[in-house]
Image (cartoon, rainbow, N blue to C red; front, side):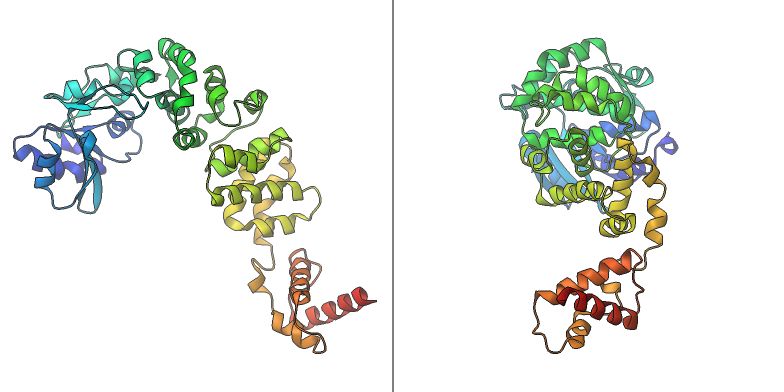
Length: 403
């Protein structure tokens, strides 16, 4: 049966065997098993075992006790990290995230009872045999997202599970079962209890899903946006999103740019502050918004030059989603390839050259001003990137400015 397992599982088998050799049970669990059944690419491998954390630590050389209070340690084996968690059930969730206590249990079936959705409550043995007490495989076949046992109880334990349900509609193209979706609508208000940073992680994954377009309708009717940063005070913003031609995004910086550009009243700052995002993300989003607005006033070459190759992919996606600059989308790549330079360092002159051309002037901000003018003129095609041509152009421009 091992031949049926994908490479990531085969590489992890020694971890299972080391545990089993000592008399412990060990299974693959979680999203990797779900993706194996679906034929999707396998991501991180998680393992559940009857061994206690200290027993796992004793068996492996490289172990990080990152979640040992909740029964989880990270085993590094042959350069790959695996989360290994002791069979457990959870106590009360007073912080809406972590159980107040965990209780170790004897069987994999008991462990699976604490999982969020049936499709994630499947274990797989080293032979590829499934342990599926909650009908997870059937849910996968039916492309249905259903909670393990009572949905209300699951969402009250950790309200972020509601965002995860919506995220899976976008990532997998599944539909949330009617009873589970009703519970999402009923308990959406509990999202207020969740740290913004955790919501942002799930929202970003939602936006990156292959089925993001169709999933926006589900998100809106779920009531969750009423308790999400920005959208809680701008109800029409999420509704407008259904009018856009969504495709999978590369991150929140693209999303914030799209929402800002489609709202005409919000700023990147308001998004980044309320979503508690990094300065880097804010800057990237601002660059994309600025470039979009420059299209109306600046030559395309200059806009593309300022974006650069990496940002151009994001920018092209934004234009496509917003749908009001379609004539520009197809020419972006050709414009980039046709640029005479890709950065200021590509100019055939330097600030020292400009300084030498005007020996009577003291060094100062005027040198940078001249370099900026040369850079723009070369990029948009008004000036050849040749030293003699640039010298003549600069002296003429300087004379005109001085007269």
